[in-house]
Every structure is written in structure tokens, then in C-alpha cells.
Length: 153
Figure (cartoon, rainbow, N blue to C red):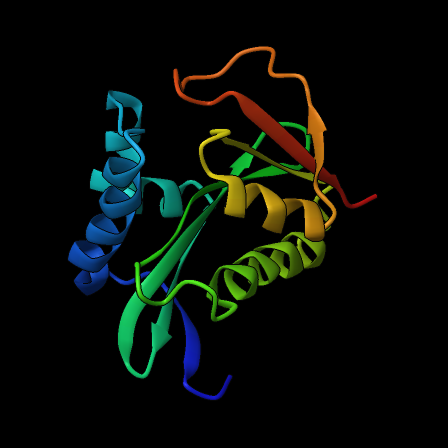
């Protein structure tokens, strides 16, 4: 897909990052207070060793994903979103693959994510990429009823 470019977050993309994240969270009734910190303070997560990527399709920012380090050589995928009208073009898969590649490069042992069973297409994507369902033991998100992991080692 020649028109697609994945770029690292820069501060001048804050509004697009916020709009993309809020669009799907509100569309599915999933927004909660716990979402605000990452959406409003992405630099805090980047300074802590995380990554945020933006998908540019024909020079318009249409998708985003966050990759946040956690304990035990693990990263967590957060806030994968693609604007309506751009879904089905492989943008979400490309964003996820960038995250997986970085985790392999960083020699991470696993990638985790939490999501909602309302997001059926996202769950199918994660399954196709090799993520496995595991039990949720604790979550900071009330709406998260699905947890998945991808073991890299």
C-alpha cells in the first residue's frame, strides 16, 4: 500500500491522536476516565520508553496505536484505532505489525492487550496475528473483558 506511511508520534499530531482515539471509544461506548491519561499525556508514555505510531494514508492521519512497556520484559498494545472510512485497508494490521517488530527488536518476551468484546474486528485481527486469549486478573479498564497475549520467546 504505497499511500500508507507509519510515523512516530510528534507533538504536532496531538489533536489527530486524540480525535482518532476518542472516535472509536465513543462510537462503542467504551470511553472511561482511565483512557484520559494516555490520550491527554502521550509524551509521558513516550518518555517512559513507549511508542505511539500514526498511520498516514495519502498524507492524512487516519490511524494510531500505542506500545507501552510494562514489567517482565513485556509491552502492552493500547489505543489501536483507525478512522471510519479507512477501515478494511490493512491499516490496523500494519500498525500492529510495526509494534510486533519493535517488540522483537527490543527482545521483549511478550505483548499483552486488553480490549472489549464489542470490538469484534479488532479481536479477529489480534487472533490472526497469533494473540491468544487469557484470563483477565485485574484491569484498570472497566470495559475490558478480553485480554490477549502474544508470546515472542
